[in-house]
Length: 309
Image 1 (cartoon, helix red, strand yellow):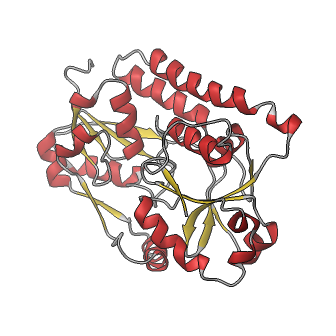
Image 2 (spheres, one colour; image 1 turned 120 degrees about the vertical axis):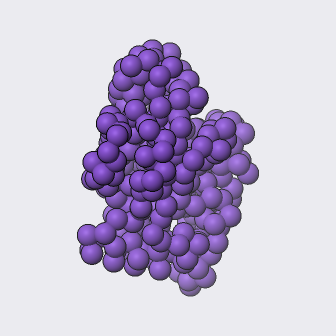
Image 3 (tube, helix red, strand yellow; image 1 turned 45 degrees about the horizontal axis):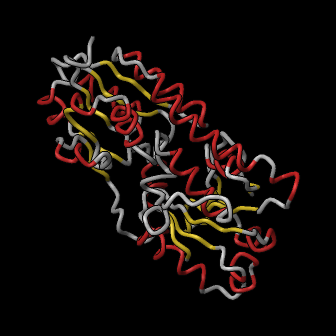
């Protein structure tokens, strides 16, 4: 099938951004409620909705998510009537995290319930940077689009950062970095994040590249006393992240942390960058490079992608 006849519904923001990078924006006929980039896809019909209130406090969101998962209920709903009207030839989804977006199972069930739509399901499952390149190539192959230049450009940007930080471990102490993915309960970011922290010249604490995010004891954060703390809560922009970080800053032990004393606590737009496994993970790497080594990097993401807390 050529991209001229393809009718794509993307149910995962990272997938939408991969399609856009490959020049397939015009073929996208529907999207998830979270797909908001690039801006021109925002007028496409929305095919999903959340069963949770994302404006609720972090602790409430966490409880509701756990309740739904333990009850074997989905966190997201697919609007099958919208899907049926759109008649997609392809549906892009994910099989990586049931909390992040609609699950593969939900999509399969939705497609099975639609009588006249034999849509091909493309399910993405990236855990590390190399998986992103592979997924871009796979999506390109499905639609007959050459992905090599897109991948080469992204890899070239990664190489620039890597090259500039490679000598640091020989010449100086690498900063220890704690990346916080959720504040109540406290959770540490994993999957591709430790890899990005390392490439940007830092030493990631508490998590291993490719592994799932885990909860973190407050006492562990305090005793490890990181050089840098970066908040990147899943699905939150800069303002919401600042709001979520505030309660932690009120705790008595907070002021004694090395990162706090040296002014190296940061908030980021996790929703636009760190939480989305797509082409903008390279932007996320550049943001980390600016934060971790401002003496070397200045890409201009400050105030847009990150701020000092």
